[in-house]
Image (cartoon, rainbow, N blue to C red; front, side, top):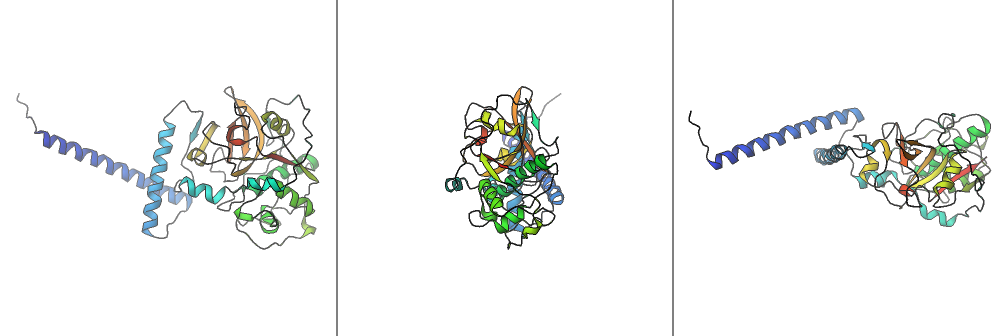
Length: 335
């Protein structure tokens, strides 16, 4: 049997045609996935140029997520979520507005009631004690500081009174404006200070969240909870933070820059992050899984992010400030 030998140029042309065909199929697949994603999250783009831009960002993010997940040695996974058509800069700019510099203007409390605690449980989950309200969603308003503070107050009120009440972040946005700046940022300690001076805070039902800065419309007669003070956890001590979390939820600030945080889906987060604190969250527990210690953290990005709105962050790392700076700026209200 005689075999026909194709000229090299023809072979190269056929190879290029095959590669081009593969790319077209891949593009079609990504395009289809993007369209399905748009339907799932109700995303509509104002013009074709914006649509093309968002598609290209989506494609790059999907490629990064899938490449990351092929590494079976990582203890956490990434997923395509509602933020998949945003660059990391767009994502962090619109949501992460913890203002760490504001701590310099706050009189830090000299006391720490759990300083001499020596015996704490090996694991804690305040959700199991009914001290954590369902996951909330701050949307594109940079008021993470309000959600962090409110979650800590909701926990302490439940443990003090036996009643879990969803409290109003919107009241903080609208009324706590002397130092904090609504969607433009703030700090948890200033929120605590405002609530003390304000003689309490409304419920979410009485003063619902709108996700934009508004005019203060609070009525002291409608306040359903109050606190009498707040304390700071000694900085750069995960043990001190554990002592506090063993007793109730605690507000903390962390750095959440980077695509791994944006697309975190499950597992214990051990990714690279620094100490430029930009986001307020609430530690509602801690534990151990597969010999890795972790903090259980309640976020305010909705239930479709992370583990139904939560993230587990590696605990007791070599750096004294903790992973992502979680032990640098921790505080809690007292009731």
